[in-house]
Image 1 (cartoon, one colour):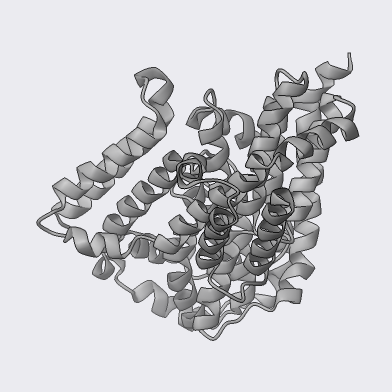
Image 2 (cartoon, one colour):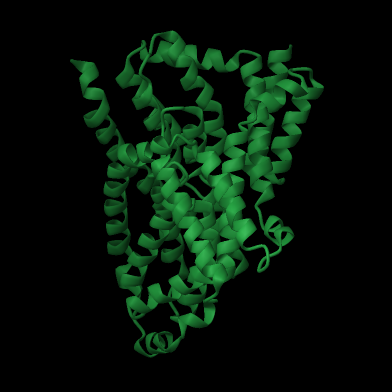
Amino acid sequence: MTTVLALLIFVASYVLIMTEKLNRALVAIAGGVLLLMANVYEWEQAFGFIDWETVALLFSMMVLVSITKKTGIFTYMAIRLAQVVRGRPVPLLFMTALFTAVGSAFLDNVTTVLLFVPVLLSLVDRLKLPAFPYLITTIFSSNIGGTATLIGDPPNIMIGQAVDHFSFVSFLYHLGPVVLIIFTVVISGILLLFRKGLVYNKALAEELMQMDAKEHLTISRLLIQSISVMVLTIAGFMLHPFIHMDITTIAVSGALLLLFLSEKEVEVEHVFQEVEWVTLFFFIGLFMLVGGLETVGIIDELARGMVWISGGDMPITATVMLWSAGLLSGVVDNIPFVAAMIPVVQELQGYGMMDVDPVWWSLALGACLGGNGTLVGASANVVVAGLAASHNQPIPFLKFSFYGVPVLFLSLIISSIYIWVRYLLPFLS
């Protein structure tokens, strides 16, 4: 009976999260509390299932970005970006993709789109350009770019915390090459599809060139402090195997350092008010929901099922994981899926698969790239859609899917070839 209750609570919570009828953090936390009421586990166990390192890492990055954006550096960079291409629509589309992808890799994709989309909408409105091509390019680029690093996309953060030997450099080394290939192919296709509909208006472009981007930039001690600490933190991520400090400690240290340095310019209370608490509590609730499945043995059965389907064959297991993660993440938010799959992959080691790294990389690629399938596939998609709607530029679900589904399949095909060539061919010999 307990097993059935745990499964029903998980499925019901998942459906409500997917439909977005209620606040997803509220649903996830409520699901966790229902598991407690159903005696699936006790509070001590529930807290043990929560990955506090992931929560702390996300919180720290939110604090760093919250303080840094007060300097206007992100708005300044976006305006200068448009001026570099002299307001020309097609180059601006490419620069939008490049800026979003790089920002998503080193800040995280949700934060990047939150900062960039309002400025982008202002720019396309000023140039009288259609917003849709730029918005979907931002979404695709944020999910593709975020795939490349440990902190780029929430699923990667979760996987990085679950596997001790994965570092920031590991993600760049293993996922960076395929991300670069996918980015090049997808953005080339986008540019070819939309180039004829992006009309250059010389008069409006000249007005843009007259803008003084420096008006949005506050040159102060806070600017120097913010950039310095951000650079130090990212450098710490890359060097953490050598300095023997985990990335969560580095991120928390960076956030605390910047809070102390900026205390006179920015009130700590205001910084904490801008933290995305809904996202953090959503993660906490998800960990509790998945913990319920683990307690009643469902996770173990899923692992057994995957081994049964693949026959313990590594190439089949990795391929199944890549495509199931990609297709399911295209339908529902990738965060709950990855939260459920992490313990499944961990259980595979108990069934004779000693080196499951190819499966981890398959999960990361499938979950992050699968988010491009639909508007509800990733948190960044939902954020962009919300920002666009608030600026009277709604993104139709079906219209997005018309472009998103081909991008999803193309990305998964390229990823399959990459995974097979780089990791799976030795298993066939």
